[in-house]
Amino acid sequence: MNLSDKLLHILSFRIEKKCGKDHVPRMLTLTVASTIIAIYFFILGILSLFPHNFLQLVLSFSACFLILVNQWLVIKKVQFCNFLYFPIILLLIIFQYFLWSGSISFVGTLVTSLFPLIAIGLLGYFRGSLASLAFAILAAIGFFIPLSINVGYELELAVKINFFLSFFIVTAMAYLFEKIRQISINELEKQVLDQQSANKLNEQFIANLSHQIRTPLNNIMVISSILETSGTLDEKQKDLIDTIHASTNNLANVVNSMVEISNVNLKERGDIYVPFNLHGTINSTLRLFSTQYDSDTSFNLKIDDSIPDTLSGDPVKLKQIFLTLIEILKHKSSGKTIIFIKVTKQGETPEEIIINFRIDSNRPILLPMNEGRSLFVTNETIYSSASTQAYIELLDLTITQKIIESNGGELIINLSPQDAVFNFTYALRKEVLTPTVTASEISTEPEQDTGKPLLPKVGMELEQASVLLVEDNLINQKIVVLSLKKLVKNIEIANNGKEALDKIASSRFDIILMDIQMPIMNGFVTTKKIRDIEASSNTHTPIIAITANALLGDKEECLASGMDDYISKPFQIEVLIQKMKNLLKA
Image 1 (tube, rainbow, N blue to C red):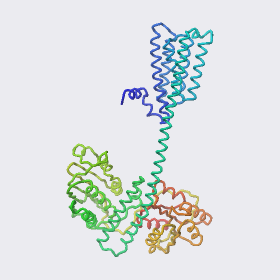
Image 2: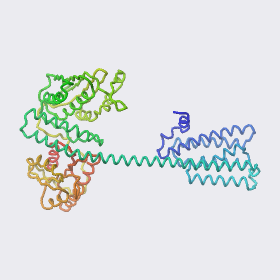
Image 3: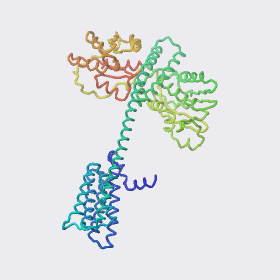
Image 4: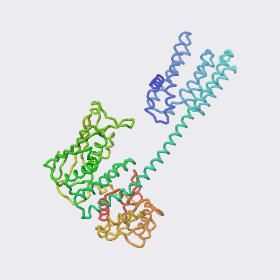
């Protein structure tokens, strides 16, 4: 901080931290100008002691006191408009007294001619100009019109000329400074608007890219689920399908992080519990890396004998975690890497086992530097002073951290110049359960009065339901039909919103799966028209939005249009089925 910055910081009394950004320039001008004016009057009052000018002494100290009181009120209350005019009016009165009384020197005329600079700086072009014009007119009356009270009429012509010359030069300078300031502000505002426009285009591009990626990702995920439940796969093939699931989820989370909603998929996937072999799940993940990097990476896996072979939980999420952490240990290290994996039991309840996973590498991790390069950090103090959260941000492990925390665990990272250690806990159930989705998937939000008729609802099984799929993409149609045709009574397809309305007019459906982006008539408009039709017939058909849109606010927009639930691509087919069951039984 240079001398001028320090001086401005002292004279501003930190007023910029107490008021809005729009008022900061004028507030700073007011506080700084008030301080300088108060100092000027104080010095003038001291100088008035020597010629024993009692009236000037009283006026100067009074002005100094009033200015300081005004400034204290500004700082205390942070009110811009209420205290803005006071120093201007006070200056105008006292300076005019000096001019009219003739008790002003050649130097004094230079000081009083600074009035336009302060007035325009505080009040702006228009009001500052009016104040300066009033000041000049009053000064001209005092100097050139003989009255009984204006001793200034008797001042030398040179003093008068000096005052008006200085006054108009200062006025021109004030106009120039204010013009430059306005040009600078306008330029900054233009840059801000241009940046906002560029950011908006960038956000739209990312949203469109996210939408285009989500649909094929969803197809991969759903097809994997179909293969997994086909009953024709052996254990090795099931492990490979789980790996595809985990890799797809990681890619989906990357897409989510592009639009800063990385927690959406974690919530929508829910807590799915399936029986799986812990040893086999970890081994299948390690075999993937061993095949790719057999010359550089080796693994040493040790699982505590007290942990049962078969547990119940979500092996896909567990694979996601291992895929991400091992990928970091491999790609952010150099040389021959040995990765030790130790699985121990940390705690136990009648229903669950809390398992601790320790992944230890014999090589240090290359930490990213500000310059965009990765360098070995050899200073021990740098490692010891950094926190786990700092490492999570540096290594881009936010999504992995959220997956672990969604299970109630905690990710701990310890790095040193010699090695790298990841530690996390994960809860798995003891008993073997059939695949299901927990109650966290069921909406717990209070129902809002939407104006729809409240009818008694009769529960229905999914196997008895007639489903309408409103989707314009042929591949997506085949994927959903392939997933649901054995689970529902029948399923029909509408290629757009208009076709959906035609089918609803001629047939009855128990539930509707609605895409959002469609030609002719999108999902929002279609849903609103369906609800308008139902309002006259006293009926209500559940509608689930199935969309590749996953931006913040999309879910709220779907619900506001009249839809009953929302699921974003890519999704697990089990989650969609559970949502359909919940709405049919409601």
